[in-house]
Length: 423
Image (cartoon, rainbow, N blue to C red; front, side, top):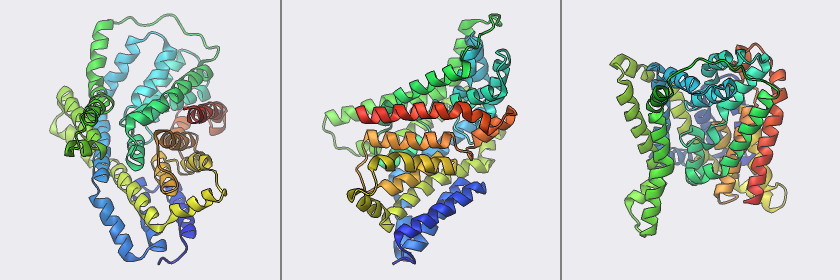
């Protein structure tokens, strides 16, 4: 038996987590400490050790943790090899409309899922939007919003991978339900960001063929990774299913091994086209951030297992059965609030899942709603690093940018609810 009742334990653990995040404690350390605190309050030491052991030896957990490390390594190598600069330059020279370029540059930089990454695209967006004579708050909105439109359908986003790993739903099935939301996000962002803004006609001429070739080369590691995740392995998995082959390979696909392989292939291609020196290659391994995010992925699974072992999902399940809590509220309000408060979609998803697990069997529609609710809550959270960095860079204020962010988020959230209700 634990020291306190499970319901009290989860409240204390959540309060502890929020305090650590507000204090800017590393997310990996925060999630793991929260899991251990919850265990100390609600479990005896034998059950705590069992949860740690099961988490450490679970193949799905190992695959997701290693995949997270690979994503962070790819992101860091893109920066260290300066290829990310070539990617943005080639794109800006391919497209003549500065409004489209200003929208696409943050999204392209968004392919590198690093904390506070909007600061990387801010100078590029500022350069393009200067020609459009936009106000600082409009520039900040465009940089922030369009950086984050890609993630709900980006198959190597750490949060999407974690959501798929926790819920057991294949990434392509979650992505399919997010596509309409992303389309609406792009349309709404473009209308709000560039309403009644005219584009200057003069633009530097460049060789389209050479710029397209360069863009495809530097984008190929990311593109190959995406195609393997959402194309090759799903087709291979369907072929195994159609042939009724109950093989070890099929089981590996279900445990996240396909994502790990895809990222490894992308890394190899990146190394081939960049050919970094040993000094450049080794530099990402000296960055504590890469290990912090990796440790956070492990912490998410540990928190899930300890929450389940504590019996917390059963408490919420009883409330749902008794009519005390609506399941849609659990899939929307709770994840959105956690994303908003913690400034971490990874933390929000892992905690929300831990609360909801056991109440329902996750399907593509419930997994997608859980993800997008957390994500949109996080997007407008005052602890969201990209938000803070962007507002500071463009010398604006949170209040001025919220004028554009809040309506954009509300329309996107309404779209997600409509998709959930209709399909």
